[in-house]
Image 1: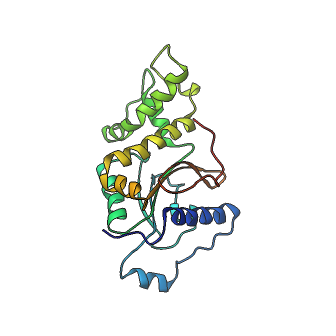
Image 2 (image 1 turned 120 degrees about the horizontal axis):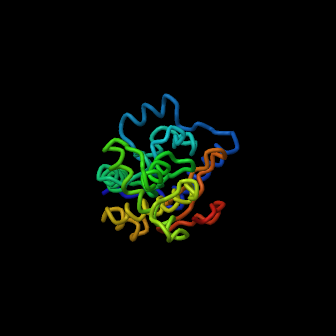
Length: 227
């Protein structure tokens, strides 16, 4: 295994600094020159990995003002944990020595909206692959719905907060990564890896830390409203 070069806190703080530059409109676009390309031809050693939704508005290197080789990224619709995702994150930890994994959700998520639609009494037909991908989001929809609506299990999309569902699903994703990987869990327990769940605010450009697991402090980041 390749050990991390920085602490989880240092890796997270670097991402926070980059996001602050992006929010302020003063990105530095670091490590994107010819010399960096030549350097990376020999190999990669990112300090952070990111698993996020594949939404086109969630370009991680831009959001965190990162350069080539700085982030090891895996994305899919609705940031749903699958074997390929677990394998990618395990590779980042064991072979590349990343010190933090960020799970990046966002507001106005189409996958979350689609999952809510699948919980209505008369859901629209969707392709089988999409239906299977949305399935892990459905428990988060139902969990939030049943907190306040006990009279029916069928969801009314106009009466549920989709962004709050997204935060419940974000927590479930972080937990699933830990449950699905001994490599990730062991690294967190050893203090060499941290996991941070973030929800990206599209209009602000801010990646808000919602939760963290491991030896790092996210309290300096403004909290998002609880689900």
